[in-house]
Image (cartoon, rainbow, N blue to C red):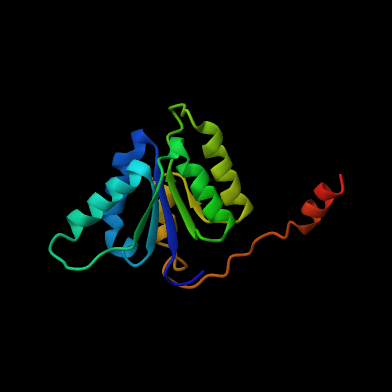
Length: 155
């Protein structure tokens, strides 16, 4: 991973306010990185960063995907599998069933398969962003699945 990370930011509806507060608290660090957001989470993140940067000139580096239920979680999973995401910060709502729970589970599974550092709540996001690896280079190891692929091809 390079010093400038590709950070995915996602939040379920009931957690968007928490993520907005977290982004507001960590805006200076986040502006050094490329942010990739799903749907309305991205709009909320952009608004929070714009409010913070209202007295400054320049732009911030943000990309928008579709809303989670409309395929954004799957787009994010594809980006992870292509090595295009370095960090996943997902303010997940464990108390509310989601219409796209299967997609959420697949996203978390693929983040684990590709060993992407993942925060699922504010405290884990705080630990992640305060790590010395966050702003520096880091060599992430990814498990070699060649034996698994060969085994499944031979069945």
